[in-house]
Image (spheres, rainbow, N blue to C red):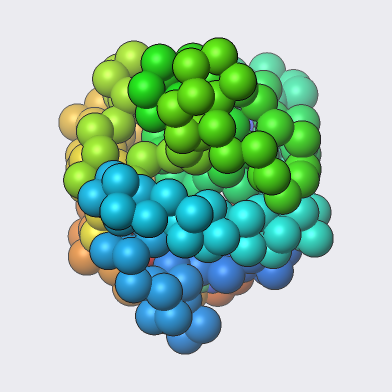
Length: 240
Ligand code: OAD
């Protein structure tokens, strides 16, 4: 039996969170083993902490770099990357900073919360890309300011052009697939609302219910890799 298939849609948006990387071995933020259970974001992931103690903040981020560098994109990432091969235009809107979508070969990616492998100078704002390494040089060679991870910390604003691009992609999509997000961090958590307004088919992949579950037509309660594989196989029951 064959049902609606990913290839039946013209514009697909995958909206991903930490659960997308869980099966790659990257810890999520909340829930069992979550980063924010072990590390207080007020000490490691906000501008005030960085001003107070940049070295401690870098120690935390270097630790996270080490964790992510040991991981690679799981099967779900490859399904997402291949989804556009036939006809659909695919945009990935991600809250993840680990860079695994790009590593898997996805091309159109809106990284709402920045990237763990990029830094920007806290003083002159110049940006720099790092390899998959622990950062040792903590001062900007141009102006002597501190490099900070180019990621969105608590209290930071999202980069407006990226948020706008994400919104535009979602407003134009006919299939919106949310994967592995707890839907509690704004403004990202608001984005599914644009898919609802656009009349897109909306699928939530998450083992657990979330505060946004009511916005979705289809709920796939299970791990991202397995549920994405079912979606890609055109499992008749899923989207019928
Ligand atoms: P969370 O850690 O808040 O939520 C992870 C979600 O993934 C939960 O709803 C889990 O149920 C789900 N999950 C766990 N394992 C899964 C699996 N194998 N397959 C599918 N889903 C699974 O992560 P986010 O929602 O991404 O921001 O968090 C949002 C933002 O909060 C992050 O981008 C980060 C954090 O503070 C910044 O750092 C700026």
